[in-house]
Amino acid sequence: MKKGDMARKALKLASWTSMALAASGIYLYSNKYLDPNDFGAVRVGRAVATTAVISYDYLTSLKSVPYGSEEYLQLRSKVHLRSARRLCELCCANRGTFIKVGQHLGALDYLLPEEYTSTLKVLHSQAPQSSMQEIRQIHDLFQSFDDTPLGTASLAQVHKAVLHDGRTVAVKVQHPKVRAQSSKDILLMEVLILAVKQLFPEFEFMWLVDEAKKNLPLELDFLNEGRNAEKVSQMLKHFDFLKVPRIHWDLSTERVLLMEFVDGGQVNDRDYMEKNKIDVNEISRHLGKMYSEMIFVNGFVHCDPHPGNVLVRKHPGTGKAEIVLLDHGLYQVLTEEFRLNYCHLWQSLIWTDMKRVKEYSQRLGAGDLYPLFACMLTARSWNSVNRGISQAPVTATEDLEIRNNAANYLPQISQLLNHVPRQMLLILKTNDLLRGIEAALGTRASASSFLNMSRCCIRALAEHKKKNTCSFFRRTQISFREAFNLWQINLHELILRVKGLKLADRVLALICWLFPAPL
Image (cartoon, rainbow, N blue to C red; front, side, top):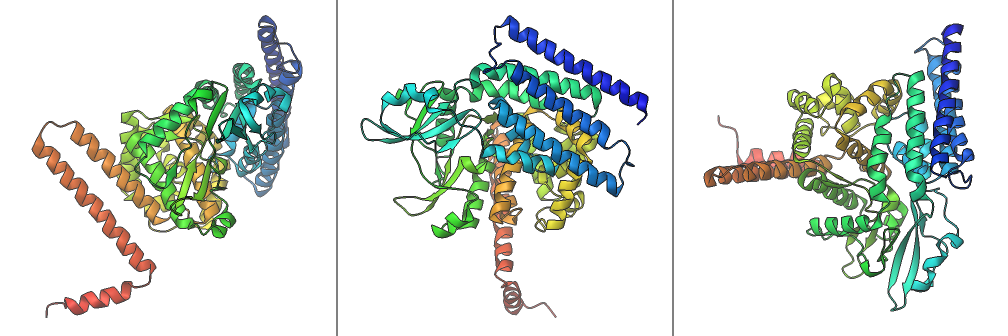
C-alpha cells in the first residue's frame, strides 16, 4: 500500500472517528444522557478508541507482507487475536448490548475466524453481575433470596429464592441500566460499523446491527419471554424428554421473571452425565429431534442454545434423561415460504441432490455463492457436500479446513450474510451453537441426526401439500407417500445400526442362505 493511500485512509479514519464522537455527543446532549456512569463520554470514547485501534492495526500491520504468503497468514492470525482481545475487553467494559452482540459473534464458529470466536466465547460465562444494591427492591417478595446469582448474562442475572408459600423459584432480574442503554448502544455500533466500512469496503456487518435493533426490545421484555416459554412447551408437549420451567405470572413483570426452579448440569458437561448415568448419545438425539421439530415443522425456533441455557438431568420421578430448556427471550419465527425452502434445501443436502441444492440455495438468497452457503449451513467442505454429508462424519482435518476458510472467505461470507433473508442469520447462529454442543459431546454429524432432520422435512412438506389440496384422493396419496418415505428412512437407519454392530456380514450371509441366487 502506498504512503499516500495510507495517509488518506488515516485521515478518513480520523474524520469518521470525529464524526462518531460528534454525532454521539449531539445525540446524548439532546437527550440529556451525559452521565459518565451511564452512557457518557467515557463509554462512547472507549468504543470509538477501540474501533480506531483495531482498524489502524489491520491497516498498518499487514501492508508490508505479500498477500497470501505463509508470513501473511501467520501475521494476520496475530492481528485477528489482538483485535479479538480488544473487542472482548470493550464488551466487558461497556456491558449490556455490547456483551450480547459479542456473544452473537462468538457463536459463529464456522463463519468467523477462530481467533474471534474462541476469544469472544468467554462472554457467555463472564458477563458482569449487578450489585445487590441495584436489585434490593425485590427482596421483600421472598421468604429467602440467594444474593449470589446462579448465572449472569448480558441482559440479566438469575437468583434462587423461596416464596412465602414455600415454593422454590428462579428469579431472573434485568440489569438496571441495560434498557436505557440499549438503543444508544445500537446507534453507536451503527456509526462505528459505517466508519469501518469506509476503510474496508468488504466489511459487511450491518446485518449484525439490524438484528440487534429487531431482537433487543423483545429480549428486554420478560413477559414476552414467558409467553415464548409457554408456547414452546405446548408446541413440543409430545416430547416427554423436554422440560420447560413453568412461569409464575402473578409476580412477573417486564424486568423480573419468576420461574419454577429446575436444577441440572450443562448439556456439554460429559462428567456430569457420566456421574448421573445419562447417555450422551441419547441427549444428542433428543436435542436434534427437538430443534428439527422447531425449525422444519413449527417454524418457531429457540435461538440461544448455548450450554448455559440447555441443562440435562434425571427426571426425579421416572429416572429418565431430560433436557431442560431455559432463556426463551430470543426466538425466530420463520415464514412458511422460508421454512419450506429450507426443508427442501436440507433434503437435497442430505440426499446429495446437487441440482436442487443450487436451486434452493439461490431461492434463499445465496446467488452464485451457493457452494459457500452449503458449506456454512453444514459446516462441511464442498468436497464432503458433493460426496454426501451423511456418508462420513467430519474429521479433524476437515474441521480445521472449514475454520481456516472462515478467515480466507470472510468478505464473501459477510456479503452472503447481507443478502440472505434476515431469518437465516439466527438460524445460522443456532446451527453453530448446536454443533458446538455436539462437538463437546463427541456426537457431531452423526447419521442419525441427519435422518431425524429428514423425517421432519418429509412431515413438514407433506403437511403443506395436504393443506393446499381439496381432493381426498390427493391427500390420501400424499399420506401414503409420506409413510413410504418415513419407512425408507427407518430402514436406512436400521441398516446403519446393523453395520454399527458389525453384524452386516452375518445378516448378508443369512439372506444369501435363505434366498440363494438362481442357477
